[in-house]
Structures are given as structure tokens and as C-alpha cells.
Length: 296
Ligand SMILES: Cc1ncc(C[n+]2csc(CCOP(=O)(O)OP(=O)(O)O)c2C)c(N)n1
Image (cartoon, rainbow, N blue to C red; front, side):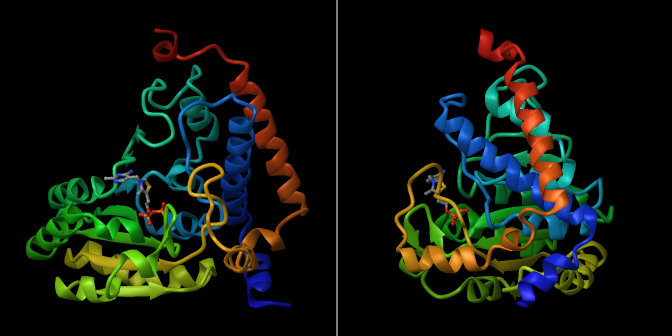
């Protein structure tokens, strides 16, 4: 028995349900793309689902979440609205943003995503400035590759100077599109956070309980002391960058698969239940008329 298997077995039904919803939702998206039923592009967070699921109960309803191009899991872990998100991606009635946002540009309650790398951090800092003193925070998800954008550093500088309640979540999956992290990032994310005097924590575990225990006091400090922090997850992207553009060697892919929580949940009752649920959602949304925007 591995530590990963034990951790998956120890998950609450609610957490496992959320993980499985994201997994099967995104597997369905890839199938829909292959079948030509979705246009544009999409990026899945296969393998990284545990990050937003672990963060979910640490966030409050009045917090803002800023997501990126790989954001379906961020939205589903927070709001769980799989039919609304699928309708958005497929341009069908019932879409979260009338079908104008698609996979990458969602505005839903206090959730915003953008496909433009580095765009979210300055907006998140401005939002956090407005939230200061309310106890709420702005949580922003970025990949390791996004640390190549200059706007990230302007934003971190202001966040540190103005002491805003900002939680920067770095999903370091070791690759940006097709460029390994060691070829695009000099030094470390820890050292870059330190340059702005920002606390940084690096989490290499997929164990949701451990992640929450480590982060709970830090997130409380972000709220109470209004101090930004950088949380770096060492994680694995299981799928391609978007759809079929995976240039990684077989050994690296094997390592990613070995770290996959789903191997220990596959075939269980809840897995089958969620697969069937997502199947029904896909059938229902696919049968809906096009959204107003798509018809125009
Ligand atoms: C300003 C900008 N430049 C380039 C792109 C194209 N692009 C989309 S995702 C991506 C790589 C992102 O890597 P990373 O931040 O590590 O996130 P990951 O895809 O690994 O989750 C690139 C280059 C973009 N979306 N925005």
C-alpha cells in the first residue's frame, strides 16, 4: 500500500466527489473535442484536481478566485456547476456567461478566469486592496510558466508594499506548454517571492488533509494580518498542454501517471456514480439549443 492510496482512501465523500467530478468532466471534454462537438481550445487540469479541492473549504464565499487557462477545476471545486460550465464551453443554453467566455474567460459570482498569462495577478492585487480589512481575500492561480510575465512582478511589488490579502497559488507542473520549467525559469519561485519579502511555502504532496493542515494557519494570517503569501504546489500535468500537444518523454509521463490520485479511486462506487452523472450532463447539455451568442 502506498501513501497515495491511503490518502485517497481517507478522503471524505465530498472531496472525492469533487475530485471525480472534475476528472470525468474534463475527460468528457477531450472526447467531445475529438468528436468535433466543441470548437476553439481547452486545457485540462487532469492530475492537478486536488489543488482547488484542497483549497475549497479554506476559502469563504466572499473571497475572489482568479483563474487561468487551466481553470475548469478551479470553478468546479468552488461552485460545482458542471452543466453551466459545459454549456459555456459548448455554447449552449444555460451557459454561465451566455457562451461568450468559453473555456478560458469565465465571470461567475466571485470567480474570474483569463487565458492571458499574467493578466490576473494585477487585477487580483487591485481586488485584494479593496477587500483589505474585510477578512476576505483574493486567491489567484498561476502556472510556473507565468512567472516569465513582467506584470507578475509589478503586481507582487504592489501586493507587498500595500500589504493586501492575496493568496498566490502556483501550480508548478514542471512544464509550460512544451518548455520544461528548468529551461524557462532561472532561480526559483521561492527566491523570487523572497525578493519581495513575501512568505513562500512549497507543497509537494497530493494529500488533501496535509495540504489543508499546512495552509489553514497561513490563509488565516492572509486574512487577519493582510499579508500576501505565495503557495507553490509541485504537481503533475497528466494530459497534453491543450489537446494532443504533449512533447514529454515517456518516462516523464510515467512519473506523472504514478502520482495520479485517480488510480486509487477508479472503479469504485462513487467513481461509477460520477461517471454516469457526467454522462447525463453531457447528453443533456448537448441536446440544448445553441446559446443566444452562438446563434447570432
Ligand atoms: C501572454 C500570453 N502568452 C502566451 C500565451 C500562450 N500560452 C497559453 S498557456 C501557456 C503556458 C502556460 O504555462 P504555465 O503558466 O506553466 O501553466 P500550465 O499551462 O503549465 O498550467 C502559454 C505559453 C498566453 N496564453 N498568454
